[in-house]
Length: 242
Image (cartoon, rainbow, N blue to C red; front, top):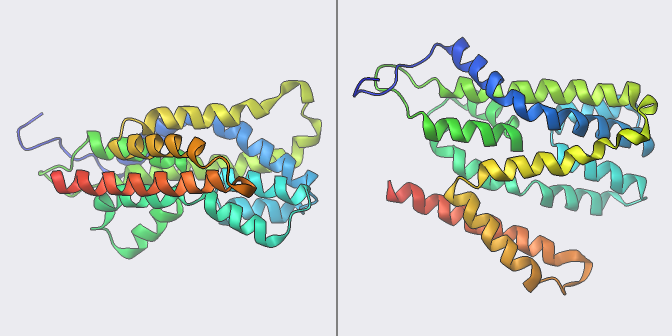
């Protein structure tokens, strides 16, 4: 490697590298998608609506909670509020990745924002941090980000479809729901390498017992908000220090 920095890889090579590095996380995503498809049918959701939600919403944890709440008879307002709170973590993701993509055209930023899910972010941000932009050519790392996001998006669509089509034939003894916590444990391990992730996790962990007495499980909401705030502050301080 020269003193000028790593040589930039062609667009296709960056894209395929993102696909390759995202692949290990798909072992947890596939059962996750199957569970969503099965849960959507159990909640009485038409199959085409469930599949469309995977394509448009593209938020696994929120989708899974939504179908569980619908199955329990929850109304539109609590379902919407819960889904919104679950997705507040994407604010931290956006702040973290903004410095790497702000130079891109709007169409690219919109596309990457749509693909900014937990698993795609965890892989892409490590790539941004470990592979600085090359001085020998244009910064093509957003193609790597695209590869991560596209791989995850395609897998999510296919696993959702499989859950909708074959969900009724999956034996209960398989207990595929174990994949959900394992997936988030793997993501937490990756994201804890970042100072912002460490700050968010620490503050949220301390806030949970402090606000546990609040009614309607609002203590968890407060912990999420405080953790996000700590992560944003840590991320901004990290940028100013560089």
